[in-house]
Length: 485
Image 1: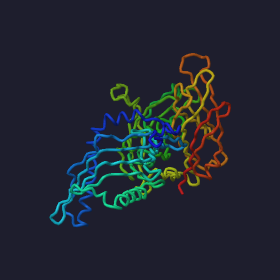
Image 2: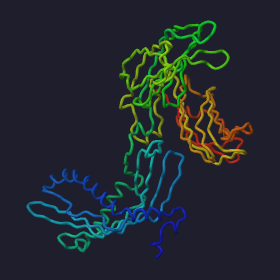
Image 3: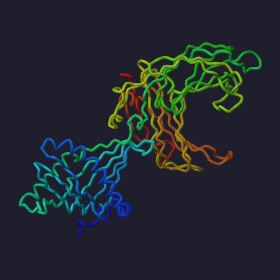
Image 4: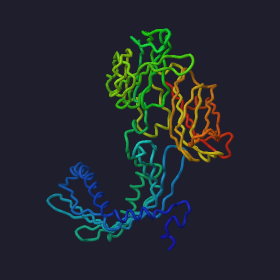
């Protein structure tokens, strides 16, 4: 009796899957039809390609049904790793009653082969990777077998049981086991792509070269004298820091001729946001006007000079946008990466990509991925966000309310003129009160100082760090140093 006991009883590492078995039981009549229909569609072109080699006229499914008995999940083991992946090992048993009737025509004769009483016991490893923030939340499925599967079935030819022939039964069983094992026995895998890699991994697909030329006929904001304009520019849907031109003092027709390179991830949806500010020595800088340029309107690899009218905001129904605020002239060049330069598979994401074109010579791109934190403790509240400080520049993740084990999975990029060999990255987890009031509005949940010399030499580091001033808190940070070489 012991071999028939489910794995979740014998092995505490396996979880029960009664809910999934119940789901399969109710859905099986519909899954049966859907699976058989898909199998026929997949097999039809394969059969059509293979039968001429053997001088066979046709191979057709006269009957194809998986029967009334669904497979049963005896339990499932789940592995947790530091990478963006989910690993599952279900134990599957299927003692089914399928009816597969295949008719083969050759040399004017017809033979009918029937497969009955199929039994399959298998322990596959299913890996969903990488996990991404867009539906269905994983880009690829990898399937492999941890042990040789057990396969048993009956095979009938024109009513006669072929498996009763001495020696044939064991030969066919071992042949199937060996063939399946040779294809998918661990570490060999069956890879099923689900999403386009570039979109799934949110990889850069090009560079936008921006040259801010000049502004004309700006309206002054200061009561006394002219304004002190500068331009702030960034791409929408991007975590990268904004770029700024220099400040032109007391000038309503300034000329900059300053150039910037910005990483592009989705030219179909992103737009360049241009805002002109009046610099103030004390107090808030006042906005003089703005506009946006959709990247999808730009030609590839060709410079385009645009003169845009400055508006108060991007609300087309706002009457104040009819007021003249001046114009801004820019030169834009979108340079998409070549297809052969873009990486294709997930495994290559574990190696560091090259820095985008336009990276300073001798410098590189520092990529920081804040994955998650664990066992955070706040004295008064626990609404954590991660605060990064690198070379005086500060970035933050989104705060997550009431979470001791937050998962951010946010990445930040810093363009460096030179390798950060002697620099340190300051990471602090901060909790902000969600209630109004001055009592305990902010609280530090721990911090860590990470030396960046190792990531420059190793190119990639992905590990957990114990938070200082925290009892058990940890944070997982991935660092990458990308160079043009």
